[in-house]
Every structure is written in C-alpha cells, then in structure tokens.
Picture 1 (spheres, one colour):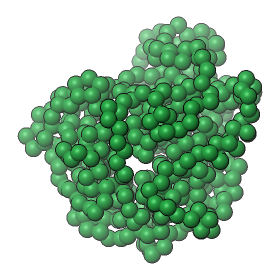
Picture 2 (cartoon, rainbow, N blue to C red):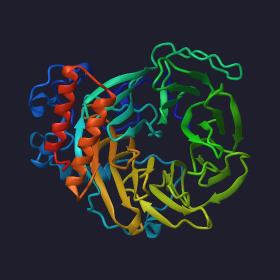
Picture 3 (tube, one colour):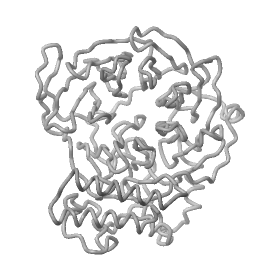
Picture 4 (cartoon, one colour):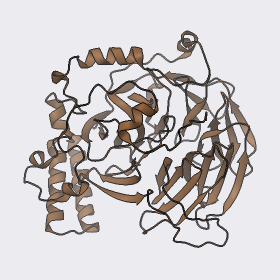
Length: 485
C-alpha cells in the first residue's frame, strides 16, 4: 500500500475529509442529539417506539413515507438529491497509483441489470458512527449475527444491537493496553493510544490491527485483552488487514498483512507466530479459502497471488487488474474468488483455471474497497470508498444487481452469518451512521414466526429486569411495524 504520511493522525470524524483532501461537506447543519449518550437508548422507553426513537434515526416506515434513509433534509437544501448525485459523480476523485485507460477498461466489464432489491432498508442510526483512520482501508465493520454489529468509532470499538437499538463500548484503545495472558512462546507487550486501521470479528474473537504495526486480540466473553504486540518495528509498519480462520486441522489462526511485505500467521491459543511469508510488495489484504488450504494475497501490485497456507508456496497468479488491490472474498464453495482493485473493478476468478478472470464488475466512481459473499453464496456485496454499495445476484451470473445509493465515505460493509442482514458503516461529519438492510422475503408469515422464535430464545438466554424486557418488546414491535413482515 502506498504509504500515507500524516504525523499525529487522529480519529477525528470531522477532520476526515480534510485529511483525504475532499471538498467541504455540503450537508453540515446544526443537529439535535447528534452526540447523544449511548446509555440514553436504554432509559425510560415510551410505549410507542417511534416516540422514543432519537430524531436523528430513520426507520423503514419513515423511509416509505418519503424521508431520506440518511435523514438528509433535501427540501431545505439549495439543490436536489439528483443534482447533487450528478455533481458528485463528475467531481469525485478516485485515488489511484497507476494510470490506465478507463475506456478500455469499460469494454471488458460485465453489462449489469440494475434496479433490483435483494436487501430492503430497515434502519439507520446515528447513535453509533464509523470513523476511518486510513483512507484506503475499509474493513472496520463486522456483523456476528443479524442483531450484533461491531464497528470502529474514534478510539473505541463499539457493539451495536440492532434488535435493542443500543450501543456499548467493548474496547478502548486510547488508554494503555496490557495483555491479561502471559504466554511463554508469545511476544505480548503493552500498547498505548493505538490507532486502529483494520479489524475482524469472528468466533467470539475481536482482532484489530494498528497504524504502527500493532496487533490486538480480545475474546469478547472475557474482560481485558488476551494478547497485544507490535508485529513489526519498520518505519512503514501499518497493519493493513487481519483475519481469523481455522486451518485444515481445525485450529484457529490469526493473520496479519503489513506494509513490510510480510504475512504473519499466529496461533490463537498460544499467540506464537507459527508462519511468516515474505513477498516483493506491501500486502494490503489476505483472505483464506473455506477449506483453509489457500490464501489470496493482494497488495501493491497489479498481480494477485494464491499461496498454500502451510508452506507459503505460490500455487497461482491472477493477472488482469490495472492498479493495486485492497479487497478479496471467497465464495462459500471455495471455487470462486473475488478481488477488488483501485482500477474501480472487481474481478471474479475460477480457482480451477486462473489463466483469465471469469468476469469483471465495475464500480461507479471509486476503487473497490470491500467485498463480501453471503454464507449461502447467493449474493456478492461490493463497496466503493464512498456512496455506493452493489449487491450482485450470483445465480444470474452477476448480471442482476441492487445498487445502494447513499452519500458519505464507507468504512465497511458486513453481512450477517445467516445472510439475513447487510450493514453499511458511513463516515461523515454530519451524517455518519450505521445503515441496516434486511434480506427481502416473500414468505413473510414464515419469517415473522422465525423472528418471534428468536425473540423468545433471546429472552430465555439473556434474562433481564423489567425495564430491559420492555426495551426488548418495544424493539421487537418496531420490527413488526417497520415492514419485516
């Protein structure tokens, strides 16, 4: 990854646009409850959820009645939404390292039928809002269920419950961090004021990488941090990506991809570094195949590599992108790999024949910074750095697409493990928020019964006091009112 010089870089949402040299945000306006205390979400709910909902939030009912899903008051601005979109498409400057011909690139891209709706808007909250440290890295949002989302907000990793509509801090990295476990084979050390550049949350583990080469591992059911260290002391040390996976033997592993051109693999029990693979360019992203046998390795090269996770031997080379790559995702069947690039395209590859990409999917105005397949393999979600998330139907050969059109930098996208929910983190001075979309269902009675059953299980697993139960009931009722069924 091309190094981004910025001494004293801070997590300041309002300064983000200045950092990446964007124009001033035209939506700035006074807001009520913009910085509302998250704890206020838990207190004294009215019987009617709409009355208790913060005015900054937007529900599905309000969106169907004409409210902008981000709460942008277009009727009070000097331009229409369509006019601003037209201007934005013309003026947005995509970051690139290598020059290329856009006309030639367009010729190889798949012709896509847009206008589909695979995921319907459900809710948008500004009680939690994503912030971005590095303008090229956008893996700062992870859903562990259709009700549980983790995101980076300033120096805190926050948990948001989309069912209860409340947030909670799970990790504060502004304070000194000391590991709770002492492992003889590990190199754990205390850290302070970490600037998180990337993160992953899987199997009850939260793993984060830092701007100075830090690695932090926290078990979500335990207090404190189990392991933390600096994986490298290089001057250009940023941790560009982290991942959590199980190898062929079922053992949990943690990977880091760094600007020092190394991929490191850690054992998640002892936190010892069990493998270290070196390359000729900075590594921006790695992802492991579903069977745990292969790594996709992408970075400051037009070429992407497939390597053996045990030996590090290169087993394949992917050639076709025109710039540096920053995102990848494996289809659940393990045969298709998607790669995202600063040339504004996503390429699809068949692992059984890597001589040429299967298809090329094109973004509207920026690099492809995040990619996610649904767990059932039916959809591929693709995010640009700002404004657009695309959802492709894999069964149609990727030619049918839903285009989610919003305004603001995208900090990350995540699909719930059951493929029922899609979350989008928006980083913006005024309209930074968390957007939730629910998978469109046609058998709504069956879906309603499923949600009721889930609510009953939630109540049994997490007994709460009277006020907590009222909160649960109000949140559940809101789902019925807001068009889940």
